[in-house]
Length: 315
Image (cartoon, rainbow, N blue to C red; front, side, top):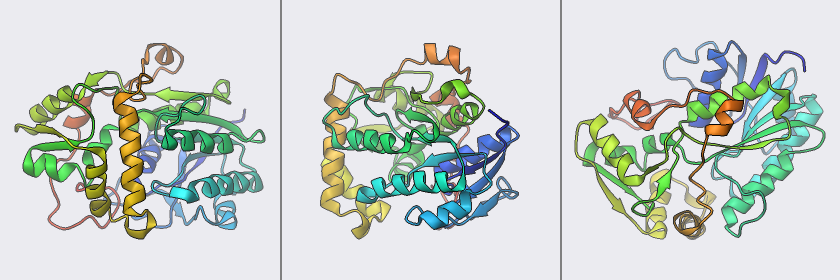
């Protein structure tokens, strides 16, 4: 495989895309941000070239992808029923542009075969589309992101109310991973032809209960944090409004999806949020970030106004 230097990043304006661009820069690669709304906050991405690209348009993506050595791909969150079309369009555009090397981020765990939980099974179906035999694909399956704690439905409660309200049952174990560590794996895979054809679960260095997450955040933020378990359906109904999903993702459909998804995560013996990284780290030697270290590196201040650019501390 020839040297991989020019690397495109889809969904680049989101947190995951930003982390991937950051890690490409840290590894001496030349990233191009594919986004319909790329606007940087500060100097971090000042030199990064951005090209408009729309998952709903094969022509748009083909034009953007042309000239790339590889692409780090993430299907947009909340794409809903459009996800499969987006995946098909991505594959077609990569082929037309002559880009074979694809590193795909599934954004969550996925089963090896259908497991009966609709969202996980949908992710598996999307992976099957992306893993086209005419492309050189590596797929990563991160279990649960630390960065979720910075979103609009978590950070204000943590910072302003000392409250972590979510639908993880008390005692639920999870191997939280940072989005930057996922980015490290994805960038490492660019120059690893031995990883082509693999679908790899990645996680953080610790498997901890939700109560330990809360105690760690309490220490880092310097204030008591209380954990409150909330029914997944009820919490999703609140999140729907906070995230401004509107008619793109109808409330009943979103709340029903979250109810099913977190009931599975809380009760299934499969334990989708847990992964032992010992063997994988021998194969791909990434330095993983513990939750405490990650939390200490975040900006927990709150903007006075809603965020208007990517990377805003308010999430």
